[in-house]
Every structure is written in structure tokens, then in C-alpha cells.
Image 1 (cartoon, rainbow, N blue to C red):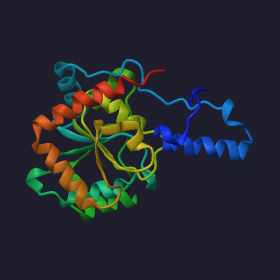
Image 2 (cartoon, rainbow, N blue to C red):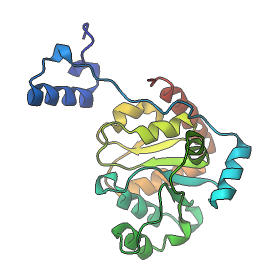
Image 3 (tube, rainbow, N blue to C red):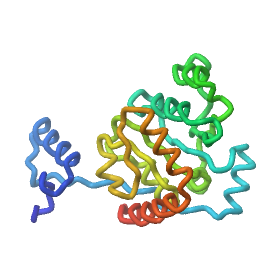
Image 4 (cartoon, helix red, strand yellow):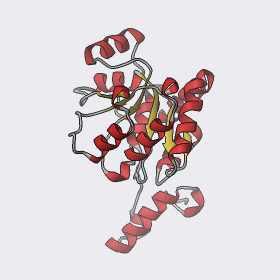
Length: 224
């Protein structure tokens, strides 16, 4: 609206929902509330090919991998991601890299991974120790994947965009609003659709380039 607050007609449906909840729960009038989006960490940008190769060799990571960065709670929907990759033909299946440490053998995701026979395709990158390492982890990826059922913003996907990585994301919660048409959006339920989307983008070099360029320009519109 003209006074800087959000209204439903602006298209910021999720932000307006949060605004409505704040007014209802806290008793704060709309005129006193401003919704401020996040932005990628300053300094995140595509790493040079030389730095990328060095990082991959030091971390023993594969080339041209799929990447997920973040926690592993149920709402992050990693089970769908494993199911999708498991449905891909072995010859078309890129390696999958997860941030953080290796999961315990009794973790439900570890059991699912074992049942699908995905261990040879799975790598753990650990936690980046700096913004530079974070940029290299993203920059090494062929595609970034964000299958979340619930996200209040979708920062990691936007950070991947800032590093020039094409993004496939769920069409759920805040992700469509945050990522716009600069990501390939897929239903948050249905591993078959995710398998098809990943396969399509892996094979489409030009499509990945277009998404990477659009995503980087889109991420640059978010600043602190």
C-alpha cells in the first residue's frame, strides 16, 4: 500500500499471512509493521573454476553434483529427494552432496538411502568454515535442490542462485514467492515429478545456463 505496508493484492501472500498473524497474536496495528526479506550473505558469488577444482579435491567431492544445504528435519522433505534420485536410471543419476556430517546408520534417511542402493552416489561436505568455502560448495554444484514442504523464506536456494547455480525447488510455502520464475518449481509431493525435473535439467545444458543467469540476477535484487 502507499504507506509501505503489504496488502494481499501485492502478490506477497505469505508475507501478508505473517502480517495478519502478527496483528492478531500481538495486537499490533498494520501501520506499525514492516516485512523485511532476507538476502544472500554478502560476498557470496561464483567461485573460479580453479578454486572449485581445488575445493572438490580437498573435500573429495565428485564433479557435477546435485546439492542440498540445510538441516534434515522432516519438513525439509529429503525423503522425497532420495526417492526421486532412486527412480532415476543409474546411468543418468548424478552424485548428491549434502552439507553437514554423515548421518547415523539408524537415521531413517540413512535406512532409506540404503534400501534404494544410493550410497555410491551420496557424499557429505561438512559445514563450510567461511563465506568463501560456502561459495565454493555452491559453485561446485550442477543443480541446487530445495524440496521443502515448509520454508519461511528459502535462503539457501537464493544463496545458490547468487553463486550462479540453477535451482529446482518445491512449489510450497514461501519458495515460489522468494524464487519467482528464476527457479524450476516442482510439486512438493511426488518423487516421479522430481526425478523427471532433475533428469530434464541434467540433460539440458542451455536450460541450466539460462536458469543460472536468471537466478543470479534475481538474487541480486535482495540486499541487506
